[in-house]
Length: 523
Image (cartoon, rainbow, N blue to C red):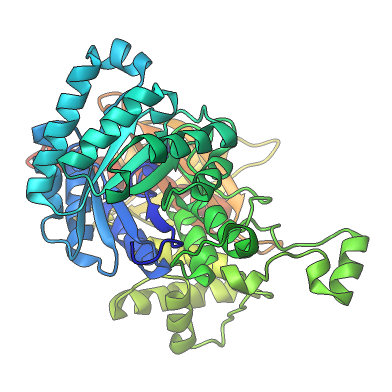
């Protein structure tokens, strides 16, 4: 290796991170996040699991084609169909990697695979060879490695390296390991596998016991040189090791670890915000490195210490991770240039047409609010990178509610053919009435599975962001909608329509000749 003390950062936000319940992204959003991750400086970007769906395949292919500056990786099970599909998606990447995996622990061999040790090794070798014939960069993962017998794990890893694997990943798939034990596994492999120096040792830790970061760092201490992680620690169940925590632990405690990464740490906070907004998964306030309270001090003793010497209570400078000391405030007197610059600083790539419509939305919001913060801008930007066509759009609405009246909503909605339709409904509250009125107009019936409201920023004039999920009985998936406004009622209507548009888009893709929706009352 060129630098024995360099840790490669393998980001799997778009693959393992997207498997977090409710964290799915559309293809436009995936490409935008991929660009941000490349700008962050990740060494390897796992773009998805191409065989999983046509959408995943298209997303990986788009990222492989459009994103440069990083290795683009696709996941595949140890079978020919998966591997060939992965390569089909990756083949035009500037630098590509095929990542193959096969379970190795006794519990997986016996209950899931129904395979013997010999059969597992044979399948692993065949698959690595097939992948290597297509791509020079091949990673092999023995799934559930942390619970695999060390003698068998050593045999599998050695055979995979002989077959052509350039990276061997040792995953703690179910978050069962502890730091000392996990470091022991890496140490044992380095001692037992004769050809281990021909491959990079990688680690992939889950956070079921809250030890993903600790386990990853313990492995780095004893020779692992690649860490697989995600922005904000997203991932299956309790998530993965958080990229921002791994990177800043190595940077802040270089005196202890003596290890470096290629991450541009000042980009950590903006990328964290972007991923949080796009996935709809809020970062907890006290989250290490990127939480809102990470650099906040309220206790009098702490404040006194900070005023006298910052290092008394801060081990990192907020600027190191991209947290501004003060929020950048934009207002109604700000121009397009300032807005465009801030969009770039936040990690987004919008064309001139998108900037123009964003500027109009920004000005409208600035007239309603005294100050427009970064979080406000991110919500506005997100509207312009969605790929769901606006079949139905809200023109206006009116609601009546109170303790002594029946909640009523009247909506005015523009149909796909441009005609404006009006209708009204009553409900248990103004929001329920709006949803029923929209259903009457669009003819799209759905069940509301989730409804959440959060303040985008502080203050009485803050935007409120509404996120919801609709479920259609005839479909096997849920449809998400999200919108923000200083008026929660309006945001609820817009979010519901966004979800309805997603349903309509899905139906048109499945049944292109079918007419979606019926004319509402007043048509």
